Image (cartoon, rainbow, N blue to C red):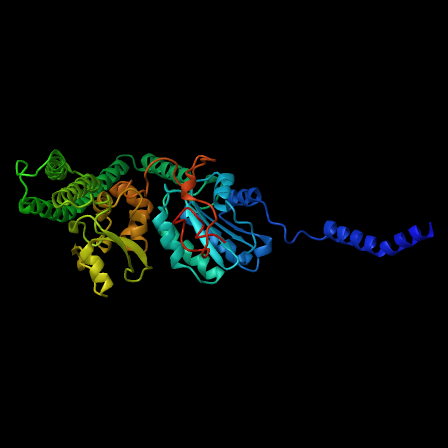
Amino acid sequence: MKAVLRIRTRSLPGLLLALLVIALTAFAPQATAATGVSTIAAALRESPVYVDPAAAGQLSAAEADTLARQIKDANKPLFVAVLPADYPTKDLFTDLRTATGVTGLYAVRLGDRFDARADSSVLSRTGVRNLVTSVQGEPAPTQLTDFTDRALTNLGGRAPSSWGGGTSGSGVSGTALITVGAVVVAGGAGAYALVRRGRRRHAEEQRAALDRLRVVVDEDITAFGEELDRLDFHPSEPGADDAMRGDYERALNAYDQAKQYMSDARRPEDVRAVTQALEDGRFSLAALAARREGRPLPERRPPCFFDPRHGPSVTDATWTPAGGSAREVPVCAADATRLADGRDPAVREVDTDQGRRPYWDAGPAYGPWAGGYFGGGLLPGLLIGTALGGWMSAPAYGADYGTGYGDFSSGGYQGGDLSGADFDPGDFGDFGGGGDFGGGGGDSGDFGGGF
């Protein structure tokens, strides 16, 4: 019995130590416990910026408030979360987007790492990647401010109504209706005259924009017609098969369609159909050339960014516009060589009041023209930081020049809409693989390569 008692006595310090550890664990503040995704999502439904208590040193309350006011005032669906460096990363973006249930652009900073994801209806994957790349390595306040400034310029959609404040669509409409009603009551016939003058002025501005745009489009149509004239192909020539004849017929039809669409155009946005037809026609010619030469059929790629008359692009190259950030753009073989040699690409310039300028600096009317060539979500990423990109993301642009140019407003759930779990997970992706976090907006479905 004494031996047993001796053993128990010796084990008492260990027992007390174990009890002490349990007590400290139970009653210590949960400083290292990760805030749940549901908690973060609930906060983002109330305000566009969330700073985790464990990451408060990254962004002060005053800086977060300033950032939130900027986003609300812009009425855009941008969500920013600042989390501790050791926050669990698996499926973070997908889970956060699902829990929030709101279509938009989601940016997350974890320690000194940063990345973002977006629904394709508000910003393309290329656009997200270019934005993320442009702010890598900056300290938190500068990085988040720069990212927000650039994102708001190019982001489609609107802020969720749950944020309150800022400018909401219904608030603007109500104010406009009240104002118009007061004018009608007070001015009567005078108000009606003002409305008529406004409509007439708007119609004149649209006609002027279309006239300026018509010059460029006619040049494109003429250039494509000259390509057809130079084409040494006859449907009945030896070696011609049905596939070649089909390519040739599609190219001819595209030429005729482009001329007809331009003849029928009444507004700047009508031009998009013209450049879409020309893009289709040039690809048909590229396919025909490959068949005749016995080469593999070309991949369906967008035209050369610098001048769509160069034909379908063959690769992507890094390019930095004046005053902008680097981004990848589709280029033809000749421009790829020029860039690789350190020379300037052959840029499509158009006439403006300030002289000849690249089309992306020439005015908002060129949005429909570019959208026909670079639709399907590519255009926003290409135009980030350019004058045309800024114009196209402005609220007044859709009213003047139409929407739908490169997924600036492509239908489906728009930014700020409550879509719940109804979204494309491919836009958000997982964490995984190797490499650095913050590599750029979901190139391969991963969060910049993973943490």
